[in-house]
Amino acid sequence: MSENIIEIQHLEKNFGSHKVLSDIDFSVKKGDVTTIIGVSGSGKSTLLRCINVLETPSGGKILFHGEDIDAKGFSVPAYRAKVGMVFQSFNLFNNMTVLQNCMVGQIKVLGKNKAEAEEKAKYFLEKVGMLPYINAKPKQLSGGQKQRVAIARALAMEPEVLLFDEPTSALDPQMVGEVLAVMRQLADEGLTMIVVTHEMAFARDVSSRVVFMKDGVICEEGTPEDIFGSPKKEETKEFLARFIS
Image 1: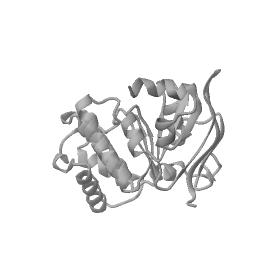
Image 2: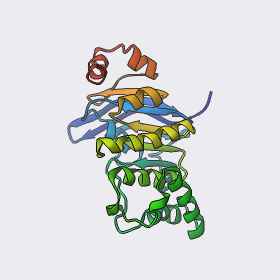
Image 3: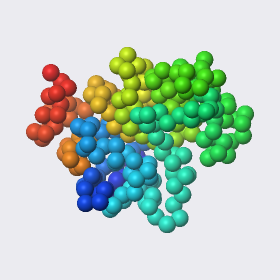
């Protein structure tokens, strides 16, 4: 039985008196592709932001290899280098070229020299089909191209886990496929991923676990066969009925 890379125990998140997450429990093992589905406002992105320490949980624990990420002395920058994140809005540096975008984190966070960082950046840009664009600035790229660069930038940090926060929601429909194709390839290669998505076909076909959230709680979780084939909760059935008709 492989060890949990990330374990979430009784996680809570409040914004003032508004409870956004309540008693969230799940774990992620090496090689898992965990997709988190649910309507907008169900707490999915907030959960991801807690995992990446962009939000501070109000209660509960997040463990990384058994270590509490909120513990005194825990290095958040080192953790973030191991648990990368791809945002729906790309978050590229507009004043840098594609190549520079993929080098800067390696140099500043991982301490790599310029030649090492460039070699690694080019390797991952080639992997996502963006090597011909290394000298382009983000404003010269389509949304799908920007997202593929963002994925390459995250991969260049060689993370153990990659978090995806609705990576296709800001894209035109024709560009969604190119980003999902890259993500499918990464899943096939065994990258551990936690993906918040509205792409139900991706969740059904690529996940090892599916987590369905509603109103800040996990309503149901299981294998894609469980969730898409024989959901137990009425809420899950109602949600999926909108997508699978």
